[in-house]
Structures are given as structure tokens and as C-alpha cells.
Amino acid sequence: MFDLSRITRSGLVRHVDYHESVGSTNDRALELAARDELPLPLLVLTERQTGGRGRGTNRWWSASGALTFSLLVEAPAEALRPETRSQVALVAGLAVCEALEPLAPRAQWRVKWPNDVYLNGGKVCGILCESAPGQSERLIVGIGINVNNSMAEEKEPAAIAADGVPTGAVALVDFDSLSRELTDVLLAVLDRFDFRWSTLLQSGFRALAADYRQRCLLVGKTVTANLSGRRVVGVCRNIDDFGGLVLATESGSRTIVAGSIEAWQ
Ligand code: BTN
Image 1 (cartoon, rainbow, N blue to C red):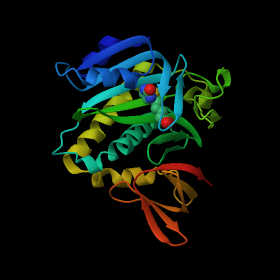
Image 2: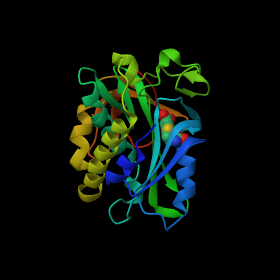
Image 3: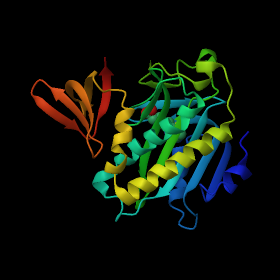
């Protein structure tokens, strides 16, 4: 159970839309984005999500004990140009990574470009950022974190799968057998996101690129990126100042600004 009055008192969000169970918090946030009267940032929060969506064809199962929410935020065009909106996903991944690290400081916390969070080499968090149709100045940041929902007890094949293929999800509880208060974890993530989001709007991505670089999982690895069906293979150098993934390929340096990472080793 979440402590809703504590979440409201934190001042980190101005409206909470709580559900014991919901299909997808991103779908609910998309619905609410059309309602101008609701104050932002708005949080859609649920105990269980039955039809969670991920990037591409991914699905996201949120068993009880997972932290599942979407934030609807104002993204003023003068601060965040349309061509730099993909940076929001990177900022969210960095914020989650920074919020979770103090909960298990001995573990290795990394961001897998663009925005998955990895705990000791396994995916612990997935993020889905979307624009609200017809509401160009509103963005939805959907975040799913495997906190107390042990993967050992998972009845589904894994917390996340693309086309039914398990992708090695992990949960925080499986790292040290400690159960966390989900309200604490949520507030830590919201706090960190608030900080990084303000930096992005005020100073641009360049101001936080160095912190992302320090946590980039793919550095030094041979990466296969899928750019709408076209594959690019190269050794990952890191990200550039705008959040693009820089690969050293056989034909020279390539910067990937949009696409998915299929494999790395
Ligand atoms: C991915 O890894 O492909 C992204 C998964 C994103 C899952 C979160 S859970 C909260 C929010 N609601 C959704 O339907 N999806 C996101």
C-alpha cells in the first residue's frame, strides 16, 4: 500500500491518480493529458498493472511488489525543442539509476542506452516516454521498477519480454532479500527526476551528459543497434553531449540518435 498523503505532502507532484489495478499507467496518463484543468506534474500510480506496454512490441508485467507509475509533465517548447525530446528518456533513466543506487550501494548500477536501468547486469527498470497527442507541451514518462516482486517467484516468463522472448529481468529484492517500502522508493525516484528534469529544461542535456557517461553500461562493448530494421555494429565509445550513442564501426564513427540496442557483448 502506498502512503498517498505522504506523496501529496512531498510537493513533488501536484495531482495523484491512484488505482489498485489498471491496464497501463501510460494509457491512463494519455487520457488525463487531454484534461487541461488537472495540475501538473501529475502522477498515475498503481499497485498492479495488467496490460503494461514497453518500447516497440515489448510488454511489461507488473506483479504485486513492483513499482509502476507514469508522470505527466509540462515540457515547454522554448525549453525543450521537439528534436531534443528523446533526451527526456535518458534523463529519466539516469534519475532512476541515481535514486536506486543508495538502496544497494554495493551493487553495480548502470544505464543501458537509451534508458533501461541495470542492476548487476540484469534489467531492473524499463521506461516508456510518450508525447500526448495534440498536447505537444505535455510528456508522459512511464516507469516500471522490479522492487519487491522477486523474479524467482515470477509465474510469467519474465517481467519483460519482447515478442515473448525473456530478457533476463532482475528485481531489487533478489539482490539482498530486503523488502523495500514502495513509497520511499517512489519518492526517491520522483525527487531525483525533479532535479534532473529541471537541469534539462534550464541548462540542456550537456549539463548532465557527464553523469550519464559514468553509468553507461555499453561503453567498450560491441553493440548491435537496430535502426528501423537496418543494423549497425560497432564498439560503444559512450554518449555525446546531446545523448547520441557513439559507435566506432568498421566504416568510421557513427552516432545513433534513435533506435534500439539488440545485442551487446
Ligand atoms: C521497456 O522496457 O520497453 C519499457 C517498459 C516500460 C514499462 C512502464 S511500467 C509504467 C508505464 N506504463 C506502461 O504501460 N509502461 C510503462
